[in-house]
Image (cartoon, rainbow, N blue to C red; front, side, top):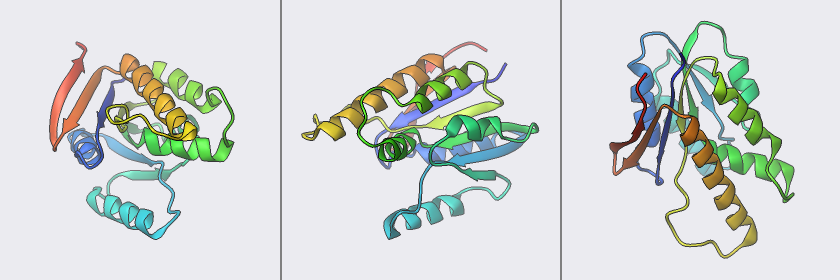
Length: 176
């Protein structure tokens, strides 16, 4: 049975680092699915730092839009994959699709894949609902969709970890 772990928390809380620690503890072949796009110098620098932190044994797949397809295309010998991160991916999807109402179909494709993942997954996301209510309608839509995604993935996950100041707090852990 494949295990899904969701790691959530605020910005710079240690989510990505903890995801790598969990994946590196796995003895099998590892993959890293990156959703960030190098759209400006600051993001290029973030991506560079993340690459340096990652063990070179990870197969890296850069996929800003179709996470489900990226996961389905992993080689059969990959035993664990880190997805970093859902909120960056959602921003990419919303940017690509524009301001249309409703939920993008990519969300449902990801939810369906989580019912039978191709390997163990460690999924990183940001907890965006603990701050102030955004003043702009698009920002509120993003926050609402991110909250929905996080709830749906957490419901399907075997383990949910909240990172606080670099400390992992287990929120959910189902017996496997």
